[in-house]
Each structure stands twice: as C-alpha cells, then as structure tokens.
Length: 130
Length: 128
Image (cartoon, rainbow over all chains, first blue to last red; front, side, top):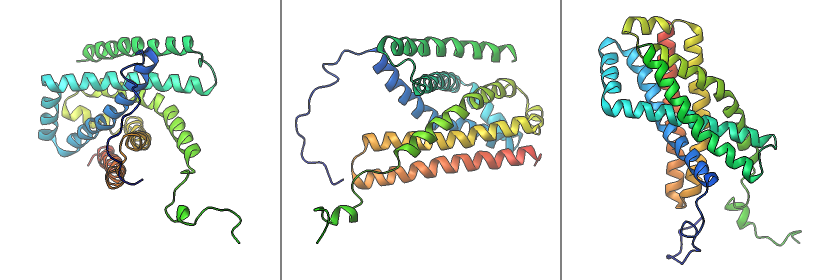
C-alpha cells in the first residue's frame, strides 16, 4: 500500500448509525484485548519482582496497593473477565448458535453483566484471603 | 504467450490475498479455548498468592501446578495477543513504513514479555 491520497470526503458512519449493544460489545472486546496486551506486563513484573529478591517484591507490592495500582489491577481483572466472556460468545457463534440479532444482543448484554458480577466476586474472594 | 493477462508486477509486489486467514482464525480460536481454563487458573493463583509475604510466595512457585499453570497462561496469552494486536495494527495503520515497524514491535513485545516471564518462572520453580 502506498501513501494515502489527500483527504477526501468519506461516507458518514459514527454520525448516523444507532449505537447498539452489539456495536458496543464488539469495540469493547477489542479495547479490552488491547488493554490486556499491555496488562501482561503486570504478570511479568510480578514474576520478575519475585525472582529479584525481597526488596524488589516489596516495591512491586507497594506500587500495586497504591491507589493507581489498585485501579489498574481492578481494571485488569474486569478486562480479563469481560474479554473472556466475549471470547465465549465468539466460540458459541463458531458452533452456529446465537447468530440471530436478538440472541446475539442478549449474549452481549450477558457478557457486560456477567463480567461486572464476576469482577466483584473475584475481588471479594481476594479480600477474604487478605 | 501469457495464459493470463496480469502483469508480473503484482506478484513481485506480493499484492493480492494474504493466503493465511484460515490459519489466523484457527490459531485465535484454539488459543481462546485454551485461555479460558488458563485465565481462570491465573486468577485463582493471583487471588491466593498476591497477599502472601515474600517467603510464602516463593514457596508457592515450587509447586509445578502453579509454575506450570502460569507458564501456560503466559505462552498462550503471548500467542493470542500477538495475533490480536496484529489485526488491530492492520486495521488502523496504513502507512507502509509505520505498519511494518509496529508489526515488528508487536512480535518483539510479545516474545520478550513471554521470555522474561518464563525465565522468572523457571528460576522461581527451581528456587534460584
């Protein structure tokens, strides 16, 4: 592909299409995927700090338990669960089920509700072991 | 006399289909399937080890299920996310040079993150 030609008028899309649950779930699936991509660094950092000695581990734990750290960890948990439920939707579609619009919309809403509930459950359980 | 009327320039520029869509689909769906139990395992491990002190956390990794489970999660995640980010880059970046650079960075980032994690896991499992 060579360079793009100078800006030409494009047909409108975001301005005119009604924003649906399916649209939202598709783009959120991609966004959570991208967030998890960088989030793997949390897992890598955790393992590295464990390998590097008690001081490094303490630094990691302090960072993780700071306000921004907790927000990031909570976000990572939610992104992982939501992207996983979205993945389940895709695997259901692979079998040919749930492809009609009302069914797909129900699956999309279920993944939003399910991921929110599971995130709270996981954090509750984590707190229970603190 | 050429059987088809196309110029050889198309082949030289490697234009046309990428011929790898099915492989991509299969890899993504297989890794997704594997990542469902592996992600659950990772969350379980995190919940049980993030609150431990240093000594107990290190002890936990001597268990092969914990070390192996995290290792499998890392490998399958790196594979899955490399393909996913590749799709994102291909969808939104069209400048030839920038696209090539980002696709390369993508592969390196995934490979390096996986390598570093596996290296740490090996050392932790052997107690080094």
